[in-house]
Image (cartoon, rainbow, N blue to C red; front, side, top):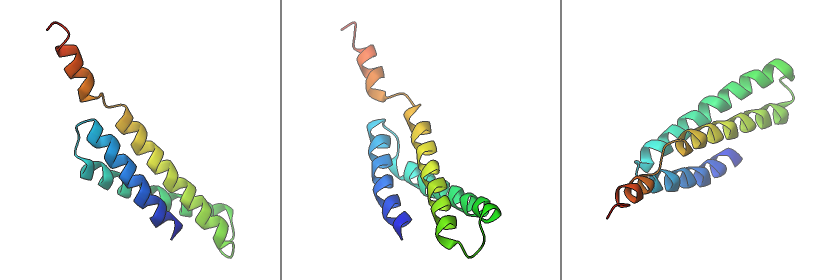
Length: 95
Protein backbone atom coordinates (compact mmCIF):
# COMPACT_ATOMS: atom_id res chain seq x y z
CA UNK A 1 0.00 0.00 0.00
CA UNK A 2 2.87 2.32 0.79
CA UNK A 3 4.30 1.86 -2.68
CA UNK A 4 1.03 2.85 -4.37
CA UNK A 5 0.85 6.08 -2.36
CA UNK A 6 4.49 6.89 -3.15
CA UNK A 7 3.97 6.04 -6.81
CA UNK A 8 1.00 8.42 -7.00
CA UNK A 9 3.04 11.40 -5.83
CA UNK A 10 6.13 10.46 -7.83
CA UNK A 11 4.18 10.14 -11.09
CA UNK A 12 2.84 13.63 -10.50
CA UNK A 13 6.40 14.95 -10.14
CA UNK A 14 7.61 13.13 -13.27
CA UNK A 15 4.65 14.56 -15.18
CA UNK A 16 5.59 18.10 -14.14
CA UNK A 17 9.20 17.61 -15.21
CA UNK A 18 8.16 16.13 -18.57
CA UNK A 19 5.68 18.97 -19.21
CA UNK A 20 8.37 21.55 -18.42
CA UNK A 21 10.60 19.94 -21.02
CA UNK A 22 7.84 19.97 -23.64
CA UNK A 23 7.29 16.20 -23.59
CA UNK A 24 4.09 14.22 -23.14
CA UNK A 25 3.60 13.73 -19.37
CA UNK A 26 1.42 10.62 -19.76
CA UNK A 27 4.16 8.77 -21.62
CA UNK A 28 6.70 9.43 -18.88
CA UNK A 29 4.20 8.55 -16.17
CA UNK A 30 3.63 5.20 -17.85
CA UNK A 31 7.40 4.68 -18.12
CA UNK A 32 7.67 5.34 -14.39
CA UNK A 33 4.88 2.93 -13.45
CA UNK A 34 6.32 0.20 -15.66
CA UNK A 35 9.88 0.62 -14.39
CA UNK A 36 8.66 0.83 -10.78
CA UNK A 37 6.93 -2.55 -10.96
CA UNK A 38 9.71 -4.23 -12.93
CA UNK A 39 12.34 -3.04 -10.47
CA UNK A 40 10.13 -3.98 -7.53
CA UNK A 41 9.68 -7.53 -8.83
CA UNK A 42 13.46 -7.80 -9.33
CA UNK A 43 13.97 -6.59 -5.77
CA UNK A 44 11.58 -9.16 -4.35
CA UNK A 45 13.25 -11.94 -6.32
CA UNK A 46 16.72 -10.89 -5.14
CA UNK A 47 15.50 -10.53 -1.55
CA UNK A 48 14.10 -14.06 -1.67
CA UNK A 49 17.64 -15.27 -2.35
CA UNK A 50 18.96 -13.62 0.83
CA UNK A 51 16.06 -13.83 3.29
CA UNK A 52 13.83 -16.66 4.40
CA UNK A 53 10.27 -16.68 3.10
CA UNK A 54 8.97 -16.02 6.62
CA UNK A 55 10.82 -12.68 6.74
CA UNK A 56 8.17 -10.95 4.64
CA UNK A 57 8.80 -7.41 5.90
CA UNK A 58 12.45 -7.44 4.80
CA UNK A 59 11.55 -8.89 1.43
CA UNK A 60 8.92 -6.22 0.80
CA UNK A 61 11.23 -3.41 1.94
CA UNK A 62 13.94 -4.56 -0.48
CA UNK A 63 11.31 -4.63 -3.23
CA UNK A 64 10.21 -1.10 -2.29
CA UNK A 65 13.79 0.17 -2.40
CA UNK A 66 14.24 -1.34 -5.85
CA UNK A 67 10.99 0.36 -6.94
CA UNK A 68 12.34 3.71 -5.75
CA UNK A 69 15.50 2.96 -7.74
CA UNK A 70 13.28 2.61 -10.83
CA UNK A 71 11.91 6.08 -10.11
CA UNK A 72 15.39 7.59 -9.87
CA UNK A 73 16.41 5.83 -13.09
CA UNK A 74 13.45 7.31 -15.01
CA UNK A 75 14.04 10.73 -13.45
CA UNK A 76 17.71 10.70 -14.49
CA UNK A 77 16.75 9.71 -18.05
CA UNK A 78 14.24 12.56 -18.14
CA UNK A 79 16.69 15.08 -16.73
CA UNK A 80 19.21 14.23 -19.47
CA UNK A 81 16.79 15.50 -22.12
CA UNK A 82 17.51 19.17 -22.89
CA UNK A 83 14.89 21.80 -22.12
CA UNK A 84 13.00 23.41 -24.98
CA UNK A 85 13.20 26.77 -23.24
CA UNK A 86 16.98 26.84 -23.61
CA UNK A 87 16.69 26.39 -27.38
CA UNK A 88 14.20 29.25 -27.60
CA UNK A 89 16.54 31.56 -25.69
CA UNK A 90 19.48 30.68 -27.93
CA UNK A 91 17.44 31.24 -31.10
CA UNK A 92 16.29 34.68 -29.86
CA UNK A 93 19.78 35.94 -28.93
CA UNK A 94 20.40 37.84 -32.18
CA UNK A 95 17.06 39.66 -32.20
